[in-house]
Length: 235
Length: 235
Image (tube, rainbow over all chains, first blue to last red):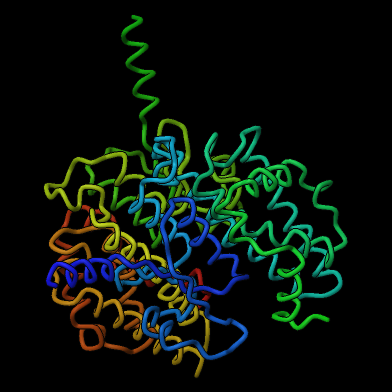
């Protein structure tokens, strides 16, 4: 009896929950990282179309009241890149190569570069994407030009490697790949041809999509576009 | 001859330069981290009062053209928190306690918390501070109220520990302490009494100021206030 209770308690201690909404580009990172590391987790959906945040979110992330939130043994980790680092640090299994064990590269300089470009995705790519969907006319065209410029910069970072992590799928791959679910939206809403604009990145997306972790998390471009049109109030 | 050349080449490889301006709250983090780890470095000043960035900055940080930049063996690391992580990872000496060796705590959850609150400083504390100095009337009063609210939140995080890193001065201490150089400015410009508003934080600032690393980097509150009045065009 005592042993069973201890086991249950241990299990509770170690339970992993990800609070997120299915189409959240930031939250997808957390879920991809968990799948990449083979960590079983409960997915608790927070409907971002509802204005009021759930009691769980208000309790677990009182500062920002945002998702994703990773709850590990009852304790929250907030911030999508923070969660990816945490997952990479806590669960080292699930990948064969030593260098990508922690998702981040082993070399400190390469780690710093991966963090730098992930921050670039958060600030520049996401910023331009939001401006693109929420503006009109010239401002919209300028936002799309910025967005393509940022993605081409990332293509240059990728170079001729298979993944941003080098041979292995790593931190920056996890950070960027959710945005590929919006490429269809860029095409529909912006009239661009992504395969022509960013061919190397589109090939990289195809390589990422071969991974179970990515395939299991990324929604279809169609669903992604439809719900964001609803978010941004665009007909 | 060959040995001397090799030694010079090695020295160059390992040379450390920090490009920054003396009153940059973000850059101070990099310089405090370097001093904390006992790393000798050259300080190259980038005068932020001049609009055009130097060729060095444009070459080393073409994406953001911002400082601080850490240049290690000719290779740049950009982004102040990124630099602090890098310094903590590369140079493990200079501190006695195992747990603070890398500036970040050893426990992954505590590391995630330190990163979360450092991001809070970047977004919320810096955001409210900027609004405080650049707005007028009710907006200025609201910004000061927000700023004090954020600092009180950080006081609660500190709790009754000597430092945010626990017993040792760590990552979040490095991230926040440069902002204390502006407390004098909050008092002069906002008419608040920081020792009355945030007593625990003010005591923490005094503890930090006992460290050579902090004392050697933080400008006086007077100098900090004067130059920011110049930046913000306030008489």
